[in-house]
Length: 184
Image (cartoon, rainbow, N blue to C red):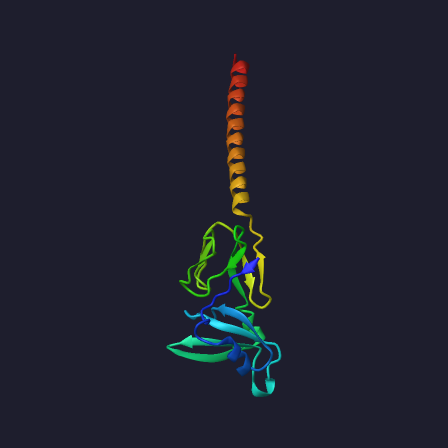
């Protein structure tokens, strides 16, 4: 399973130079939406932040109004943004997510799509829906029943309802016959 991470900052910064400037054994987590921004941030995890300088575990870059800003958050605050709705395409084996509002994404084969970032989630019914964990880079499918299973369950309920109605109708007719025979 390949997780397709956003590349919003790819042409705006040089990742190699960034690693040299930020202390604390930094790992790039990917582009994600925080604080209700319409632009994603490039989130990183500093495994050993310099606490003496006031550094936090999760530094991030934010590009706004033509300027690049750096900020950070602690682990407790990051938990709010750690997970993101995502969709896994069984055809091309890719996991995709939407970084921010109106960020429409589709997998490489075009079978699944997702949109909305953290503001709303709009996605195709194809594929497996779940949560992407930015810290571990893993995808966990929802426990919800798949579309195929849902359709089968709905069809089964329809058949059961129809059978119940038919049985009631037959029972009603039989009751009328018995009642007529007793009255004669």
